Amino acid sequence: MLKKIYLLIENACRFIPDRMWIKFRFIFLMKKKCNLDNPKSFSEKIQWLKLNEHFDEYTSWCDKVEAKNLVKPYVGEEHIIPTIGVWDDFDEIDFDKLPEKFVLKCNHDSGGVVICKDKEHFDKKKARAKLRQCLHRDYYLNGREWPYKNIERKILAEPYIEPEKGKEELTDYKFMVFNGEVKCTFTCTDRYSSGLKVTFFDKGWNVLPFDRKYPRSTEKIEKPKNYEWMIEVAEEIAHNWRFARVDFFEVGEKAYFGEVTFYPGSGMERFYPEKWDYILGSWLRI
Image 1 (tube, one colour):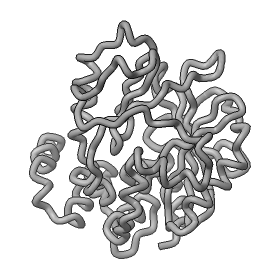
Image 2 (cartoon, helix red, strand yellow):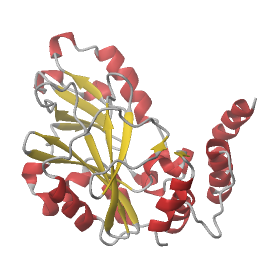
Image 3 (tube, one colour):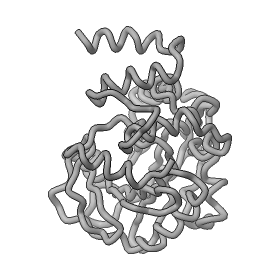
């Protein structure tokens, strides 16, 4: 019943003021009230940042096409996955001009990736449905993530990056930068196989004893070869921001920039145990 009420209100949320909508959504997803006047937890402080920091550069960094141009001075072109093409709609794509293996995604979206490893057997109908759904995903309206309000939504294509031999997929390395300093990192593994695993590490690459929404991996995850370089770049990119997450991939000896986000999980993913929400919150000065 509560979920039905939430969905009804979500459909009308464009008419609800930001602060009111955030507090309502926080209660529904986090099962507790959100203190925006004196935020203490990481989740509360992310909501505070949504309401109080509206910088135009955030919009450019959250656009996956624009972010590649912005990050170039920090990493060089060799650490950026090239963009093959950009389109307003799926039906504009000329697949004859794409390589045999490629990736399609939306420039504002999270998780809505279409991977083609064999163009001859690529299911265009399924891909069209998924990407059109992703194009309509509105992170500003649903989560009041301000930078996404003014992104002109597009579909982009990139070359498919082959994982290392013996691995089914790439590992995401996500660096949490608090007031210019990386305090912890998490990895995303098994996304397309046994189910997403999210494992947090301290700066010394020791596993931290908490989960956030998803379970941690039971397998040992090796520190990336370019770990120190990734930390340095993440801190350089985010040195003027109160908080950002900077992502990378690694294949063999080479690292690639992934993306920048300012509100991971919209700041509404529960911590287990809950005390870690407040530990991370203590790292973030606002």
